[in-house]
Length: 302
Length: 306
Image 1 (cartoon, rainbow over the protein chains, first blue to last red):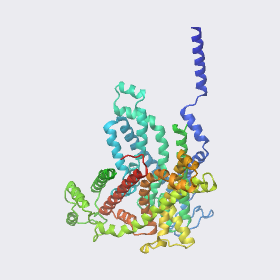
Image 2 (cartoon, rainbow over the protein chains, first blue to last red):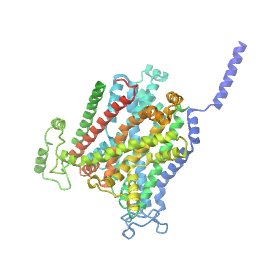
Image 3 (tube, rainbow over the protein chains, first blue to last red):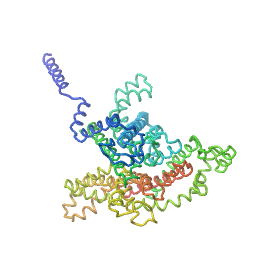
Image 4 (cartoon, helix red, strand yellow):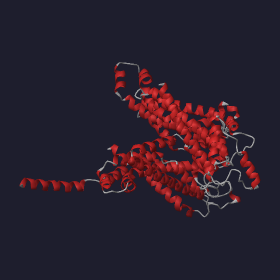
């Protein structure tokens, strides 16, 4: 009896210590992410670019649609106030680059959000219901994989007009396929866990189980892949804007600026250079942050 | 084997049908009509035009008649280029896109595989590092940044190559667009090839081959290359789609009279039938190509049973 008591005391003592020394999944992931120098630097750059894009236009005296016929194709200079020069209509490139960044980042995030929403629900439903439903849904996914999506997006834009809101809904609506696969895989491993069984026994409806129990548990991995989706969305939007099918004048995005810049690069290379630099750096950073998050959270890596 | 090929080819048919159905109904339910321009037409004239293109019939009837003419290879008349059928427009653009696309694709695969193999063989030397960091840059650099940069360097500054145009497809007119299309995918192929080559080189059968005293070249070419190529083959499908998609931008930048240019012009003019026809055509190419890649995979990988 005495032995037993001592044992259990020792055990609880041990458990207490464990609790102090142990780290949760998230702390562990955070530490690993912080140790990843490339990812941390990229995160810093992203924060900087976001702040600059959001508030930087106050640093300049010009508005994004101020045309100045006296200063067309003005080279970058500090004195004139055109830090990045001007474009073919004499509009300030610094302000336009930042505005383009606002649109590109917004479309990127919103597009990723739409894709995540559809993909998560589709994948969770397919994985949780299983059986014939799963087979049909996955077959449909395979069919959709075979379709060249950029053409599909251009088709959507052609039919429904060049509304920037529609553009990112369209982009998001066709980019959820990978997300659906990932979520389905996670759901399959979750659905035999005891707490799902408990919910079923309590008579919770299938839809409720998916939205209240499955989806919150896959959110971590979803967040990681969403970070990798954002740069793809930015690229897609720029692609459309480059072709003249995205945002319309006088609004702009990085893709639209690149399009203008590529036409005047013989006389005004800065019109191409600055938007290109901003975009490439942003894409780089998103990719590194996404990779870093994935490495930090991926249980296979341990 | 023949059974497997047939089965894989048959599987492509539902995919095609889904593609055609979705695009067709989207076009029919789109707001506005291709004829509602700035200048509104009198209703009688509009009705006559719609009757000419069969738009006055019930949607389902239109759908089946479209399917019927598709089965005979007829993509219908263009709504914008009044005197042309979509087939005629495609026939003009196809040779250009086919030439540049196939050259770009072959270049991509050959270049990616050899550069990746080189990096794997010289693993962790300066050569490996420089190849791989270039490849990383290639992965995030979109074609619409890369292509103008290439034009700026090689056409404007150095003046070695023309900045655009087709000119019957002479070699110097092809080089820059081809590089613009393929370099990004060369980078991806190189990364994949390097990874799989390193893995294969550390496996037991390669050690056996080395122990037998086979010459190095022989080991790489006869033993390591085939298994290392598997992930490369499975990436060929996505890369093909990427190159076709990229061609839209590349053809716009270089002013090539190909598919991509036609597609963008169709989209800008709201030429529904042209865009619909091209989407279906490009979709079919993609689907057929994916089927071919699957079959190719089965040939290379002895583990796949058919």
